[in-house]
Length: 257
Image (cartoon, rainbow, N blue to C red; front, top):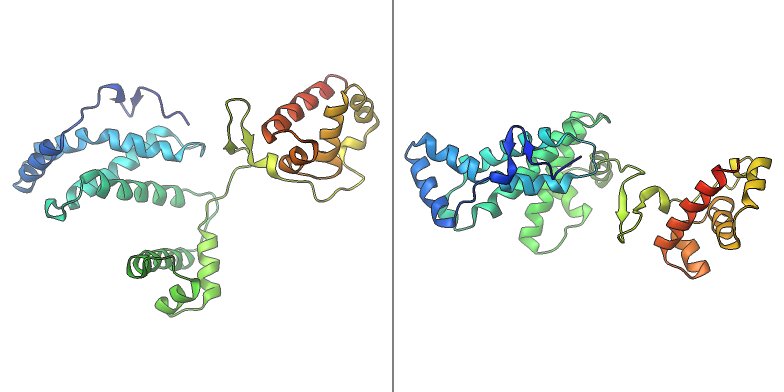
């Protein structure tokens, strides 16, 4: 997903206008009096807000134009429901609505289908959770949420777990300026079976072409099933270095297989 392209949905993001707080208040007053042009100006003047929000949804493989359009729907809902008397900045009010609209879109387009009844329970649980946080000033327990909804705790846990978005194995979780460390780099091979591809004759010969450190890293990673973090602690280097050395060693081996 590219979020830094200049034109999105035919809108030149490099030339988006920025409204001052006083201009915003003036336009809201005009819109409340039926001025449709004021509403259009409010939408155009807050598209940068939508652009900033969709950057939170990178690495999901979604079309940036689609996310921008969905974000604009959230923006328009925020504009139509915002009240100047609330005495809060419009951006403070609008951002959660834009995020909510995008998340609903992502959930509805999730390839993993979830029953409507489960989704309803999960969304009600999230609403109750927010209400209890405001009431008690702390995170509520599952038991407290279940009591409010008059249901059992297992059903709440199952519903909330069902709406969690799957994480790609190729999603970066750390970046130090070099190669990013992916989710898959944190997963150890717990099977440790004799039939793995590293035990082929060609592979064993390729291992002999590596230096001692590279052989140690690959042995710990693929024979012993350790994560990159565990390997880093064992041989006394950083996880980022382990990641780079592992990739280099595998590429080196491929030349000899």
